[in-house]
Image 1 (cartoon, rainbow, N blue to C red):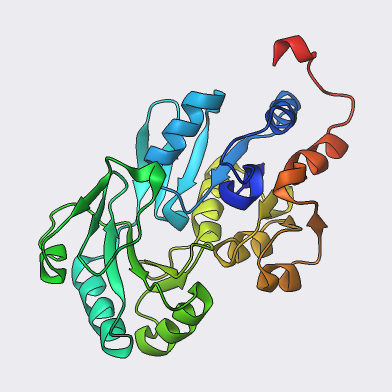
Image 2: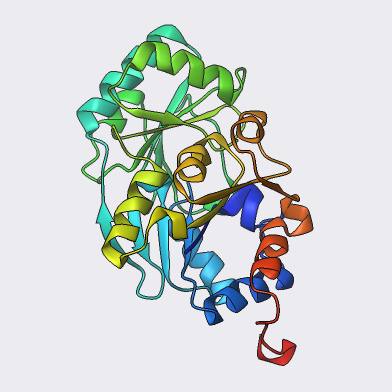
Length: 271
């Protein structure tokens, strides 16, 4: 199995999948490898990528909260964050960091309160404002992540503060978004969900090759038999993961796959 993060890893900085990387993925599939996307992104982002590239198969979305079948656009399994837990954590963080803003990711939409001023160009049409922080907790939609954002503090600072205030009540991480902290149900990680997926398929961790660049990738890079940190990765990832590849702009995932599956490429016309 090839398990890859998207942003900063499989995708270039402009959000595209290069022809070279797409050829390498298809060569790996021809050789019998399964490609699994393992991302902080929600299913709606994966849908757009699949439409642009023809990628199919399985995606582990929202840092492990969702397993998504790309072809049928179906959530196969989910581990949601209880709304009462999200509210308790948000209250604790707001007390420690008064300028912080909050949003709820549902997989289909982002519900955000007035203090959450982060807007994502790729989420136009999916971002839904609510009148106040209190209104966030009235949603009936299942929540995959609580998002906490600051325009003053970087993500690492937010993560350190949240670990002091939230204890073991939730899973805390970030994927490099400026001032953005991602909060999931306790125990929800990319690695945990990928392990369940692999067990169901009879695939051992030693048979998994993983790629990533941010702190939310650390669990899967450590769990996989072989984990590659991108050369552009967060310093903590570069320090923790001994095996590196070149940057996402240099098609680092393709660089590894081409060497692993040398001589098994399709003719260019078939791509």
